[in-house]
Structure formats: structure tokens, C-alpha cells
Image (cartoon, rainbow, N blue to C red; front, side, top):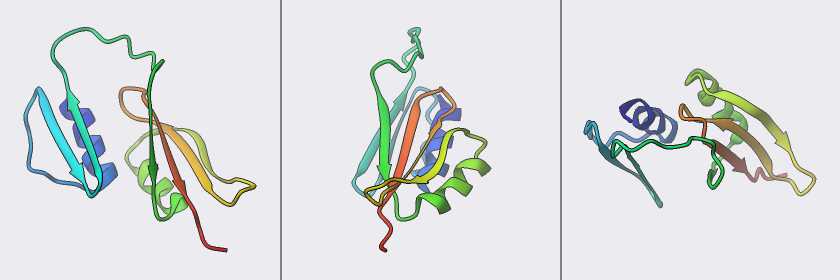
Length: 104
């Protein structure tokens, strides 16, 4: 749990001073993320959830994600409707999407 919390703190640029081994609440502007481990087994097959964040610049965030050592699913790609999307795995293999809407 501390490894996953540290990943999200770096990813979101947040330092809330929490170092709890069981539960951490990470708050960034409008986003609240709770990471916990209650000791029960999880299937980690990512069947029910993915996280998506709108960022200012997905291509810039791509460099940060690479520096964090995340496995990339899809690098930043401009979609026909103008959005730039990318996806990657967090340390527990949850799928994360970043998207941005660059001005033309």
C-alpha cells in the first residue's frame, strides 16, 4: 500500500504528509483518492475499474509517467475529435488514462 500511495503522490504532485501503512487519503484539487489495504486478498484483475484524469498536457505527463517506471499501454495519441489520450498501469496493474484537450 505505501508503494502505491507513493506512486499516486508523485503522479498527482501531492504531498499530504501521510505515511500510514494501512490507509492514506490523497487530495488534489477536485480529486480525492483513498488507498488502503485492509489485509484481505484482492484479485487484481482490473475487471471493474479504471481511473481517468484530465491533465493540461498528456504529452508532458507522459514523460513523468515514464520517469515513475509505469508500464505504458498506449503513448499519447491525438484522437480525431482533438483530445490527446494515453494509458498506463499503476504499480498494482490498475489502468490509468490521461487525456488533454490541446487548443488548435
